[in-house]
Image 1 (cartoon, rainbow, N blue to C red):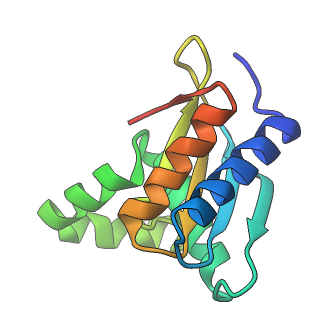
Image 2 (cartoon, rainbow, N blue to C red; image 1 turned 90 degrees about the horizontal axis):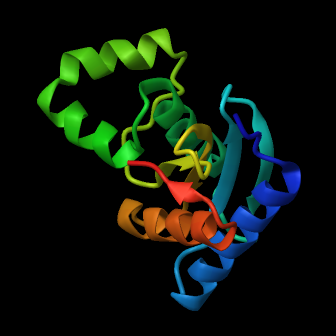
Length: 142
């Protein structure tokens, strides 16, 4: 299994932030985690709110924890609110079911990490996450 490096995480973050600036989005916060859910790198743009780290981390961590992106987490949370309420409890509040959390896969389609972005609406956060992963030559998981 490939490991996600600091250099890759930094490239992902910088490309995601560049996408946000190109689209003139609200200030973003971006967290990249390894496959074990440990923070590799994080950046918060000037003007991004102070709780944005926890949201970005929770989108990435929740994606890793459940094995699919936070867009799918959001869909499932609407169908199974009691289950997702319980997930919030057992995860210590680290599950954020809103688009912007995306699994990062290597060339063998193995999960090597996840990215979480917070700052704009979830759909825009996710677009930036996808741009970051693509810029690093990696694959976005669903």
